[in-house]
Image (tube, rainbow, N blue to C red):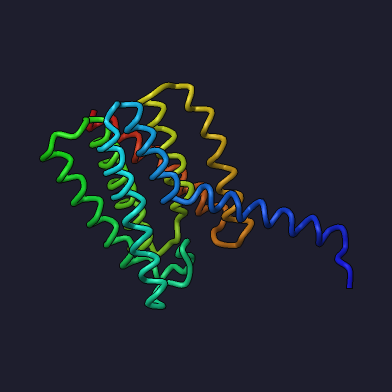
Length: 200
């Protein structure tokens, strides 16, 4: 049976939502922004290091857990699957932060890592204590945008438009409620921005 015009349009919208969700995934944004800051600060090696601890290793762990059938998908949409994952990623990021401090990495990249750690810690508290699946996608998107505004140029405020688009995709796909993406964006912007400012 041929699809109706509304069904065809709906599938196209779903494809757009999936594309935005993938492009705006936390591990993707963390890797891209870390490498960008590394180039901007003329410290590519440290940029690569931060990309590894903030995006590469966390995603590797997620894929390993998927292989072990302990996580259902790479966006970790099930609330109960997020608890251990957050603890592991916090440990990875904290270890990386200690290495950066001890090895005198650029202050901006140390602050970037500290901001990521603080944001994930806040999300972890909301996830495990409040038992609410706040959006990591929008938290990372908003947090990174605020950091780039502080570290590079205020013109990066324009990138804030990406956060509601990513949030819409998460709601459209049924992975979060509108409240969860809004709170995620607020937590990311405030915690990441505040922590980055403290460390610089």
